[in-house]
Length: 289
Length: 280
Image 1 (cartoon, each protein chain N blue to C red):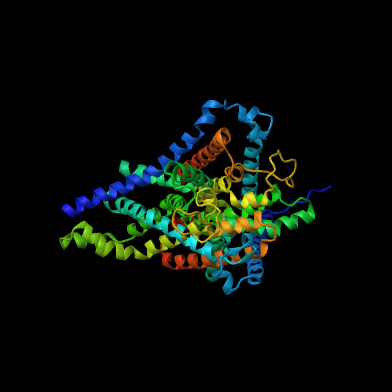
Image 2: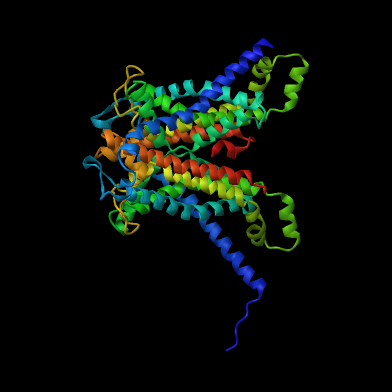
C-alpha cells in the first residue's frame, strides 16, 4: 500500500487551523463563564436587593433584615487599614523612589521583604493577626485587629504602585526643582506628589478593593458578630465574611447572600474600573497582579 | 538641608517598619508553632493514623495532597486557557476587541474569592452533583481555582508577549513564517521566562487560596480516589478549625500555616528569578 504523504505546507495549515480554533474556543469559554457568573449574581441578587436591605441591620442570623451594620463594620475595618498602611507604604515608596539608589542594600532588602509579603496567603495573615493583634497585643476579636491585619496585607500593593508612580515622574522635574534651589522636601510636596497623584489614587483604589474582598484574614481577627459596632474594640463582621457565613452556616441564607454578593461585586467592579482609569498609561500589570 | 535630613530619617523609619512586618509574621508563626515543632516529633505529621486533632492524631498528608492536587489541576486548565487568551489579545483581536477582552479579564481578577466560592457553591456544585454526586468535590475546587488564577496567567503572559522585540517578529514574518509559526517558534520562546514567572505566581496563589476552596471542596479529610471525592486543603483546614483549636492542635495549625508560607515563599523567589532573567 502506498504511503500517503502530506506535504509540509498542508500539515502546517492544518496545525495553524486547529490552533486557531482552539484559541477562539478558549476565549469564548472564558467570556461565557464570566457572563454566566455575573448573570447569576445579578439575577439572584436583584430579587432580594432593596433600599431597606442596605439600611436595616440583619435579623435572624441574616435571613431577614439587611446589611447596614455589616456595611458600617466593613467601612471601619477599611478605614483602620488605610490609616495604618498609607503612611508606612508611601514613606517607603518615597524613600525607594527618591532617596536611595535602586541597587542599594537597604532598598533591596525592603523590596525583597515586600515582594515576599505580597505572596503570603491571606489565611496566613489571619493566623498572624490572631496571634499578634488579637492575643499578644490584647485587642481581642475586634475591628481594630482586623483593620491592622489588613494593613499588613495592603503594604506591598500600596508601596509598589506609589513607587512606580513616582518613578514615572520625569527627572527633568527634579533637576529643575534643584536648579531653582528648592529643597527635596519641597520638590516632593509641590512637584512629585501632584505629578504622581493619579498613580497614588489608582494604588489606593486597588488597595481598597483588596481590603473589601478579603475574608480569610478577617475570620479570626475581626470576628463574626453582626451587631452594629459601638467601638473599634467591638467585633464586627465584614461584608465578604457575611456572604461566607450566610451561604455556609445559615440554612436558608442564600437569597440575602446573593444580594450581599451583588452589593460587594458592584462595589468592587466600580472601584476597579475607576482605578484602571487612573492607571491608564501606567504599566498596568505591575499594579494589577 | 535640615528639613531634608529630617525627612530622610522619617522615611527610613517607615521603610524599616515596613520591612519588619515580614519578619514579624515569620517570628510569630514560628513562636506559635514552636510547641508542635519541638514537642511533637515532626514525623508524626506523616505517620499518625489519621487527622483527629482532639485525640492528638495529626496526619497532615491527605490535606497536603489535596492542596497540591487542587492547585495543579487548576493550573492544568488555567495555563492553556490563559495563554490562549493572551495570544488572542496580542496577536489576533482587533484593538477594540482586545481592549474589551482584556478589561473583562481584569474585572475577573477583581472578583473576590468569597464570591467565586459562593457561585461555586450555588451553581457549580449542584451541576456536578447531577452528573456525579456529591458535587462538593476536588473537581469543584479545581474549577473555581481555575477561574481565580486565569487572569493572573493571562495578564503576565500578555505583558511578556508585548515585551518581545518587534524586530524578532518582523524577521519571522520576513522569513515567511505563518502567524502561528511566528507565535509558536518565535514569540513563545522569547516570552518564556515572563510566562513561567506568571505561572509560578499563579501556583502560589492557588496553594494559599482559602475561602473559595473551603466553600466548594466538601472538606472531608481523606485521600481522594477520584476527582468527584470531597477533599480538605491545608488552608481550608486552618479556617475550619482555628475557632476551637487549643494547645497542640492550635500549634499544629500554625505549623500548616508555616508550611504554606514556606511553599509560597519558595515559589515567589523562583518566580522572581525567572522574571529577572526575562531577557536572558
